[in-house]
Length: 152
Image (cartoon, rainbow, N blue to C red; front, side, top):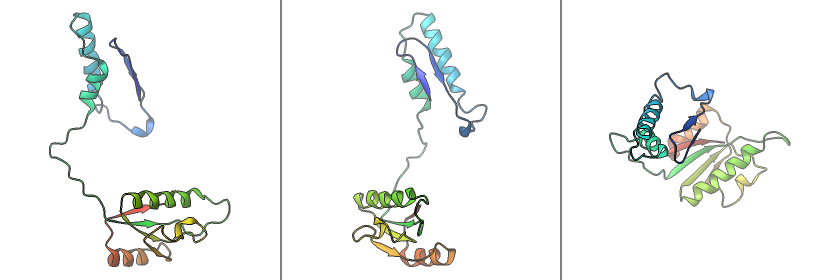
């Protein structure tokens, strides 16, 4: 996160502890700052700091990344929940199913909460009322061959 002045060569950054950056990860920020100050001090037509930062921080892979859209996704459900027991997982699973359907991706659901909309007709393409244990999940993966797995 950070703030960039629209005209003057000022900017600041804030690092979050969870980022766990190394000592040289964003060393380029100092280069951007020094270049901007030099341009400003020498009355050169300044390149905006925002543009400089964007130019330096944009990732450019050496080899083009080819992404293949998944055709079938296995969703590991949260199982039966009691009242007051993290119902947001059921909601997130239902929303995931809806989003995948909008993208025409086939959905397979294991271990749904049968008391929610997840198991309604027209939601998941296939529903497996099985617990999440390695043997059952492996069996479904072998028979269905999904392109990916999502957790709710």
